[in-house]
Image: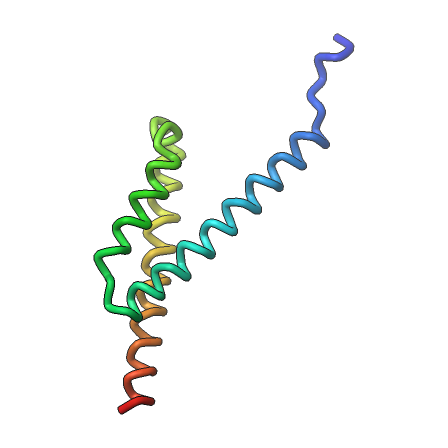
Length: 96
C-alpha cells in the first residue's frame, strides 16, 4: 500500500537521538557516582540508580529490556565505583 511504508530515515534519526541521550545520561551518571565516591557520599549512589530506574519504570515490564537494563546499570555503576575508589586512593597517596 502506498503511504504505509515506514519512513526509515526518520526512525533512524529518532533512534540516534535517543541513543545519544542515553549515552549522555550514562556519562553523567558515572561522573556523579565517581564524585560521590570521592566525597564519601556513597549512599547518594542509590539515589542516582533510583532516579534512572524511575525514568525507565514502564519499560521494565519487558523482560528482555529489564535484563538488558539491569546488566548495563550494574556494569556502569561498578565501573564508576571502581574508578572512584582508585581515584580516591591515588589522591590520598598524593596528599599523604
